[in-house]
Length: 423
Image (cartoon, rainbow, N blue to C red):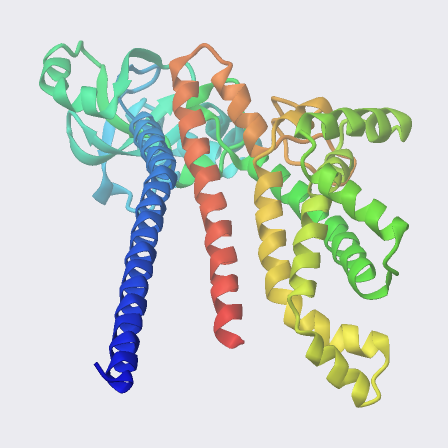
């Protein structure tokens, strides 16, 4: 064998060994990739299971709460006990009240006197509830006027009541009314709190929630955004800034009951504000302030540094750069974080109970130093009552609160998508 052919054979053998080694490495790499993919799928399943369970529990909660909002009742009326067709009074109100009073045997002049006199009119509507019932023994969509002294012979959930409808209808005594009663309706938001569930509503709690939330916005937005701007754009990097950052993040994880204790001692007792709207707003502002600061800092930090450098290159001052370049770009993220913080504040109960949110407030607040109640506290009050009708009211209030919180989350999501699309 000549030397040239020997060298060629050695080269071919070396290349075959190299290809074999590469093939083994490729096979090992592919196996490693397959293992990583399997691990990723397993982790994805593990992450999806709790999310699925949470969604299922929320769906069950909503279905159960919705079921309790509408009830089938057998009412033993205190007054006439008559129902009226929707066509007789399409707009409800005084027209139905007039029909009810005439059914009780009152003359037309007496009815006019009651409805024209402010005090008599207030008394009538303070004792009666005019409701468009979905279904009665006389037919669908009929007006029923209930009195606070009406007796409740039967009160069952919607599904059970519909299944027993024929049985309940056949068992009606003379004068009794069988009706499908929706507790969540327009009148629910127009009536004040009351000791009688028939005439109780959410109006006082809604107005109190708007008072407290509006004041929290006025207090928390300037402080939170201003603190975030200072820490990100003005504060020097050192021990002081690190100290502030660590403490702000720690405060964001403090339980809300601790803020309630702080508000009780500082605002209610030390500052002598008492159990008022102002004390509640100050307490909730402290509660959400760390969250607002953290969200605002993240939004400000997400603004590219090149925009700041370009602004400085054009001769702008630091304040001009912050106010005209950085802040407008960070507004969507700030708004998103603030909406989520406000949603948390609206759903809080424990801090407000500590700072004196009253369980029963029959009148609307008229200032910052007024007594108040809010929707979560009103729900807590109704659930604590013994009468089953209060549970219906609590379910209606829960759905109202969930709907409002869902609206806030939808707005936050829309703001986030809008800001991402605009970049």
